[in-house]
Image (tube, rainbow, N blue to C red; front, side):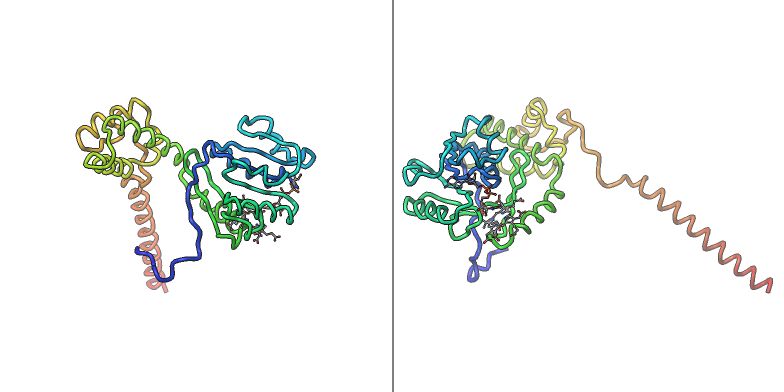
Length: 280
Ligand SMILES: C[C@@]1(CC(=O)O)C2=NC(=C\c3[nH]c(c(CCC(=O)O)c3CC(=O)O)Cc3[nH]c(c(CC(=O)O)c3CCC(=O)O)/C=C3\N/C(=C\2)[C@@H](CCC(=O)O)[C@]3(C)CC(=O)O)/[C@H]1CCC(=O)O
Ligand SMILES: NC(=O)c1ccc[n+]([C@@H]2O[C@H](COP(=O)([O-])OP(=O)(O)OC[C@H]3O[C@@H](n4cnc5c(N)ncnc54)[C@H](O)[C@@H]3O)[C@@H](O)[C@H]2O)c1
């Protein structure tokens, strides 16, 4: 559906920010900071953490002890020198004044900043997250209700197929193999690659894609891509997913029995009524 261009606005940009090897400064070491650490470490960032040892949350300590990507300084924030060569700043401290000062310095230096719980001091908000391997879902209420974001996340989690993450991973591998076999950017080959990938993803069930291994991928490319078709799972050595729709026999038999039982009851009632009229 085309967007309503005249009234467009009031939201925020939803993107998957690539943080690999970017320098992220986290100020604070409490529970909120530990969540921030997890969020940026999952994105392969290089993290500097500044917080006095005394206030560290156990999870923050664990990240310091076990993640080589975290460089820890046992002290309070020291001023603009702490912001040199930094690509992103996240503060989670129980000191509003210092938070606002850090935000002002970041804005001067044009470093994107998030100050936990102070929306005017945020260039971007965090959201409620679902992760399953490469699958990433963020629920944002754009600052209106973090608790509802948390509740909606739990509901969405229930709807995501169990094998979604694994299926995505396997399809990712298949796409890499396909690009090796049929290289090139754009053009006819690009169009044909995209069409074939769309057809494979549409024709195969998520559970079937999740089972793809190297051998099956090889066969799929050989007997599928090379011949311009999408083979069935069993044609490439896989086990097809049991159909979710019950087989017609298993569906019609109980229905038929039910129908016969119902019919017999009605006949019995009708017969007994006729009898009682006659006997009256
Ligand atoms: C999603 C989540 C991600 C995360 O932080 O990791 C997140 N807050 C979470 C929880 C949470 N935060 C608060 C409560 C108490 C209940 C309630 O108030 O609803 C709960 C619920 C709980 O703890 O269960 C209090 C709160 N938060 C903010 C304010 C200030 C204000 O609104 O003005 C106040 C009031 C302070 C006060 O009253 O003094 C502000 C922000 N919090 C945001 C993110 C950004 C907007 C996200 C969005 O709207 O989508 C934004 C704008 C900035 C930011 O921090 O990035 C995480 C859930 C993770 C999960 O469970 O999955
Ligand atoms: N967005 C959210 O989900 C959310 C939820 C709860 C609380 N918060 C907010 O986030 C902030 C942090 O919450 P918390 O529960 O982690 O707090 P906390 O009190 O457990 O931790 C605060 C941390 O900041 C450190 N600190 C304080 N001043 C510092 C300074 N100048 N330099 C470096 N480190 C400093 C402390 O040593 C401690 O490690 C609070 O302001 C709170 O309002 C946000």
